[in-house]
Length: 501
Image (cartoon, rainbow, N blue to C red; front, top):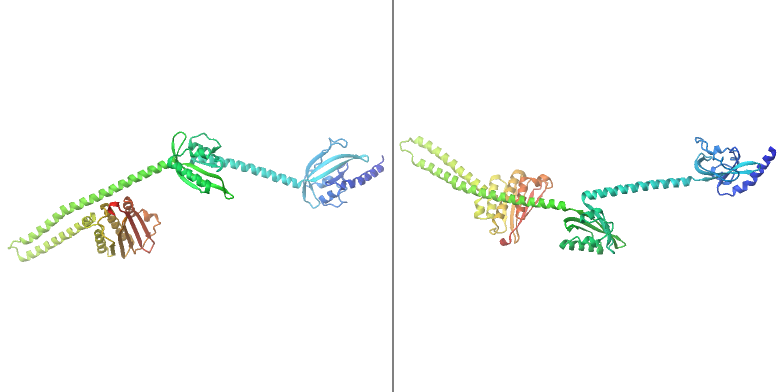
């Protein structure tokens, strides 16, 4: 066949093939032996943005990005018209944008030549989907790994804090619990268990409480938070805190879930602290009683011994003045009388000071006339010493108040007025004692500078602690109300024993 005849047949072949190519849904090009485009269908023109006359004659290399290495399908193994070579690569459109394509090449022998028919599919979207799918898979793997780590951290944290989780279906009462819950109950861990099984570890009042709480959660969706004692499978008694809440869907309880913590050790520590605190209270009360007894004893000794000495000394001084020798010159007698008068005055001052000390140690009026008279006397004495007006009133006599209550209230009143002197810079104090059928209350208010009760120092001063401790020892309470610049009000309430009401 002559070259002219071959060209004629080739042109005829391309012309006959063009309608068939245009009918295809995929982009198609016909390439010659030199990988030059001989024909392109309408879909190819549309996909790459060229006109129908621009593509014929272009080498396949022109469809690839300039910065990419030339990649041609491997057709060396293809024989005749059997088989195809598939290649995924990147092509460039006329406008310079790039697309991912999958090319499928098949040899076609026609018109005395070997042609290459290439089908091109735009797989850009598919690659994007595959990339997204890959990213989702990697994200899922990371999430699953994170969940696994979190579960391990929760398991370790549960072991350290002795906390575990549980849940059950209220209809079947079947559920599950964690390893820590099984450890608390001293049973072998199984993923499946039942609420009925868990309730068997409680006894007496504790069993009643947990059954009522679980029933309320199932019926009404009521949450609960309880501290209970259970008996483990090995007979060991443990304290647990169990918290439960209902999962409600469409107004119906679908699951009951919660957590449990072994608080046995904490309970033991709290019990020891409570016992230690009670012992300290007993010790403090004993020390206060001993101090009051010692004060009373010292006051009696001062009154009996030193008081008698001062009285005798004053009598002796008076006797000296009566026994002057007549031969003593008058001017000498006058000088002696002046000195004797000074000594007598000093002795009188000593007696007054002794009485003040005795009253401070243990005011006799508290033992003889009672609490109301003692508070009235101390307020008047405070007013004389400080110049601060002190008004005291009592609703009724306090003759039936026990001695311990009277002593505590008197000492608290002393401490309050002492604090007024030291800190309040007040001009007036108003105090009131009220006695009801069940308690006795002492309220003291001043118009001083006040303070912020929320500050730690306001509650931890020794005087305030002493007042609180005295009231607390008798089952009473102390309430302090104050604001900077608006004075202070202290309210003491102590219950009375039945015999005193």
